[in-house]
Amino acid sequence: MSNRPAEFWREQRPYPLIPNWVRGLILLVLLVGIGAAIFVAVSAPDRAASLAGLTAVESRLTFDPDNGRRLISVDRHSNSEVWYRVTLAEAPIGSQLTVHCDWINPVGQVVHQNQYQTRVIDKKRWPTHARYRIGPESPVGTWTVRLSIEGRVLDTATLEVRDGEDAPPLEADGGKGGEL
Image (cartoon, rainbow, N blue to C red; front, side, top):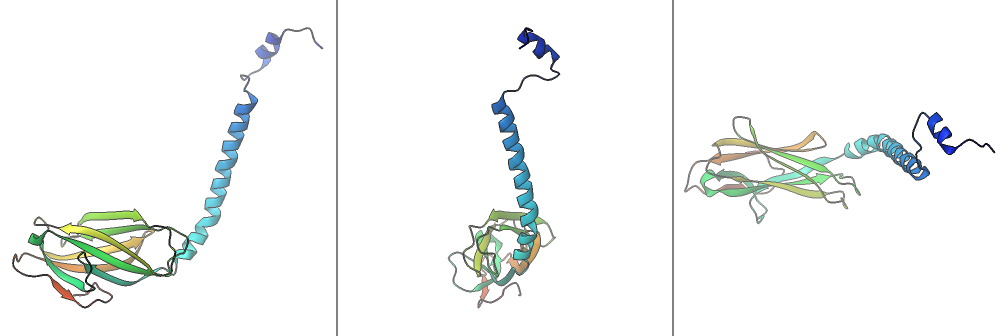
Protein backbone atom coordinates (compact mmCIF):
# COMPACT_ATOMS: atom_id res chain seq x y z
CA MET A 1 0.00 0.00 0.00
CA SER A 2 1.10 3.45 -0.74
CA ASN A 3 1.31 6.23 1.78
CA ARG A 4 0.22 8.82 -0.76
CA PRO A 5 -2.89 10.77 0.11
CA ALA A 6 -6.14 10.25 -1.88
CA GLU A 7 -5.97 13.82 -3.21
CA PHE A 8 -2.87 12.86 -5.22
CA TRP A 9 -4.82 10.34 -7.35
CA ARG A 10 -7.70 12.74 -7.95
CA GLU A 11 -5.32 15.35 -9.24
CA GLN A 12 -3.78 12.88 -11.71
CA ARG A 13 -7.12 11.96 -13.38
CA PRO A 14 -7.98 13.98 -16.49
CA TYR A 15 -11.70 13.35 -15.93
CA PRO A 16 -13.93 13.70 -12.88
CA LEU A 17 -14.80 10.59 -10.91
CA ILE A 18 -18.19 9.28 -12.15
CA PRO A 19 -20.20 7.08 -9.79
CA ASN A 20 -20.81 3.54 -11.02
CA TRP A 21 -24.59 3.94 -11.02
CA VAL A 22 -24.30 6.89 -13.46
CA ARG A 23 -22.04 4.82 -15.73
CA GLY A 24 -24.59 1.99 -15.61
CA LEU A 25 -27.43 4.38 -16.47
CA ILE A 26 -25.50 5.79 -19.44
CA LEU A 27 -24.75 2.28 -20.68
CA LEU A 28 -28.41 1.28 -20.31
CA VAL A 29 -29.60 4.32 -22.29
CA LEU A 30 -27.09 3.59 -25.06
CA LEU A 31 -28.13 -0.06 -25.27
CA VAL A 32 -31.84 0.81 -25.42
CA GLY A 33 -31.16 3.39 -28.15
CA ILE A 34 -29.15 0.92 -30.21
CA GLY A 35 -31.85 -1.73 -29.76
CA ALA A 36 -34.58 0.70 -30.86
CA ALA A 37 -32.59 1.70 -33.96
CA ILE A 38 -32.11 -1.96 -34.89
CA PHE A 39 -35.81 -2.68 -34.36
CA VAL A 40 -36.85 0.23 -36.60
CA ALA A 41 -34.37 -0.78 -39.30
CA VAL A 42 -35.57 -4.38 -39.28
CA SER A 43 -39.31 -3.64 -39.08
CA ALA A 44 -39.43 -0.89 -41.75
CA PRO A 45 -39.37 -3.35 -44.69
CA ASP A 46 -42.03 -5.46 -42.96
CA ARG A 47 -44.25 -2.37 -42.56
CA ALA A 48 -43.92 -1.50 -46.25
CA ALA A 49 -44.70 -5.09 -47.25
CA SER A 50 -47.79 -5.20 -45.02
CA LEU A 51 -49.14 -2.02 -46.65
CA ALA A 52 -48.44 -3.10 -50.24
CA GLY A 53 -51.81 -4.86 -50.60
CA LEU A 54 -53.82 -2.14 -48.81
CA THR A 55 -56.59 -0.75 -51.04
CA ALA A 56 -59.83 1.19 -50.73
CA VAL A 57 -62.66 -1.08 -51.87
CA GLU A 58 -65.62 1.11 -51.05
CA SER A 59 -66.01 4.85 -50.50
CA ARG A 60 -68.90 7.27 -50.19
CA LEU A 61 -69.57 10.82 -49.19
CA THR A 62 -72.58 10.88 -46.85
CA PHE A 63 -74.32 12.78 -44.12
CA ASP A 64 -74.56 11.51 -40.57
CA PRO A 65 -76.49 9.39 -39.83
CA ASP A 66 -75.53 7.28 -42.81
CA ASN A 67 -78.54 6.30 -44.92
CA GLY A 68 -76.49 4.02 -47.20
CA ARG A 69 -76.66 6.40 -50.15
CA ARG A 70 -73.81 8.31 -51.81
CA LEU A 71 -73.91 12.11 -51.60
CA ILE A 72 -73.42 13.80 -54.99
CA SER A 73 -74.09 17.44 -54.17
CA VAL A 74 -74.81 19.67 -51.22
CA ASP A 75 -76.03 23.25 -50.75
CA ARG A 76 -73.42 25.38 -49.03
CA HIS A 77 -76.10 27.29 -47.12
CA SER A 78 -77.23 24.11 -45.35
CA ASN A 79 -74.01 24.20 -43.26
CA SER A 80 -73.84 20.40 -43.56
CA GLU A 81 -71.21 18.13 -42.11
CA VAL A 82 -70.11 15.76 -44.88
CA TRP A 83 -68.60 12.38 -44.00
CA TYR A 84 -66.13 10.55 -46.23
CA ARG A 85 -66.56 6.86 -45.43
CA VAL A 86 -63.93 4.49 -46.81
CA THR A 87 -63.56 0.74 -46.37
CA LEU A 88 -59.99 -0.53 -46.65
CA ALA A 89 -59.15 -4.05 -47.83
CA GLU A 90 -56.10 -6.09 -46.82
CA ALA A 91 -55.55 -3.88 -43.79
CA PRO A 92 -52.55 -5.02 -41.70
CA ILE A 93 -54.03 -6.81 -38.68
CA GLY A 94 -52.41 -5.84 -35.39
CA SER A 95 -51.22 -2.46 -36.73
CA GLN A 96 -52.36 1.12 -36.51
CA LEU A 97 -52.46 3.30 -39.63
CA THR A 98 -51.91 7.04 -39.93
CA VAL A 99 -54.70 8.36 -42.14
CA HIS A 100 -54.66 11.71 -43.95
CA CYS A 101 -57.68 13.19 -45.67
CA ASP A 102 -57.52 16.39 -47.75
CA TRP A 103 -60.62 18.44 -48.56
CA ILE A 104 -59.78 20.39 -51.72
CA ASN A 105 -61.92 23.27 -53.00
CA PRO A 106 -62.66 23.93 -56.71
CA VAL A 107 -59.55 26.12 -57.16
CA GLY A 108 -57.26 23.36 -55.88
CA GLN A 109 -56.58 24.65 -52.37
CA VAL A 110 -56.53 22.19 -49.47
CA VAL A 111 -58.94 23.93 -47.10
CA HIS A 112 -59.07 21.23 -44.45
CA GLN A 113 -57.00 18.21 -43.46
CA ASN A 114 -57.97 15.35 -41.21
CA GLN A 115 -55.09 13.37 -39.75
CA TYR A 116 -55.47 10.62 -37.21
CA GLN A 117 -54.26 7.20 -36.21
CA THR A 118 -56.66 4.28 -36.38
CA ARG A 119 -57.27 1.94 -33.52
CA VAL A 120 -55.41 -1.35 -33.66
CA ILE A 121 -56.77 -3.12 -36.74
CA ASP A 122 -58.48 -6.43 -35.98
CA LYS A 123 -59.98 -7.35 -39.38
CA LYS A 124 -58.86 -7.31 -43.03
CA ARG A 125 -61.73 -5.04 -44.16
CA TRP A 126 -61.41 -1.91 -42.06
CA PRO A 127 -63.92 0.97 -42.17
CA THR A 128 -62.62 4.47 -41.57
CA HIS A 129 -63.94 7.99 -42.09
CA ALA A 130 -63.18 11.71 -42.12
CA ARG A 131 -65.53 14.66 -41.98
CA TYR A 132 -65.75 18.34 -42.82
CA ARG A 133 -68.42 21.00 -42.53
CA ILE A 134 -69.42 22.68 -45.82
CA GLY A 135 -70.61 26.17 -44.88
CA PRO A 136 -71.88 29.37 -46.52
CA GLU A 137 -68.28 30.58 -47.10
CA SER A 138 -67.40 27.40 -49.05
CA PRO A 139 -66.83 28.08 -52.76
CA VAL A 140 -69.31 26.69 -55.27
CA GLY A 141 -68.04 24.01 -57.64
CA THR A 142 -66.56 20.52 -57.63
CA TRP A 143 -64.69 19.62 -54.45
CA THR A 144 -62.26 16.71 -54.20
CA VAL A 145 -61.70 14.60 -51.11
CA ARG A 146 -58.48 12.57 -51.06
CA LEU A 147 -57.61 9.81 -48.56
CA SER A 148 -53.98 8.71 -48.18
CA ILE A 149 -52.14 6.39 -45.85
CA GLU A 150 -48.38 6.49 -45.29
CA GLY A 151 -48.07 9.01 -48.14
CA ARG A 152 -49.92 6.86 -50.70
CA VAL A 153 -53.27 8.07 -52.09
CA LEU A 154 -55.80 5.25 -51.77
CA ASP A 155 -59.01 6.94 -52.86
CA THR A 156 -60.54 10.19 -54.07
CA ALA A 157 -64.15 11.30 -54.27
CA THR A 158 -65.85 14.40 -55.63
CA LEU A 159 -68.73 16.48 -54.36
CA GLU A 160 -70.59 19.29 -56.06
CA VAL A 161 -71.14 22.28 -53.75
CA ARG A 162 -74.09 24.35 -54.95
CA ASP A 163 -75.50 27.76 -54.08
CA GLY A 164 -79.21 26.93 -54.19
CA GLU A 165 -80.79 27.56 -50.83
CA ASP A 166 -83.92 25.53 -51.65
CA ALA A 167 -82.24 22.71 -53.60
CA PRO A 168 -82.13 19.41 -51.68
CA PRO A 169 -78.87 17.40 -51.66
CA LEU A 170 -78.52 14.95 -54.51
CA GLU A 171 -77.90 11.34 -53.57
CA ALA A 172 -77.43 8.09 -55.45
CA ASP A 173 -77.38 4.48 -54.43
CA GLY A 174 -74.18 3.37 -52.65
CA GLY A 175 -71.16 2.12 -54.53
CA LYS A 176 -67.52 2.87 -55.03
CA GLY A 177 -68.26 6.58 -54.96
CA GLY A 178 -66.39 9.53 -56.26
CA GLU A 179 -68.14 9.73 -59.64
CA LEU A 180 -70.87 12.21 -60.45
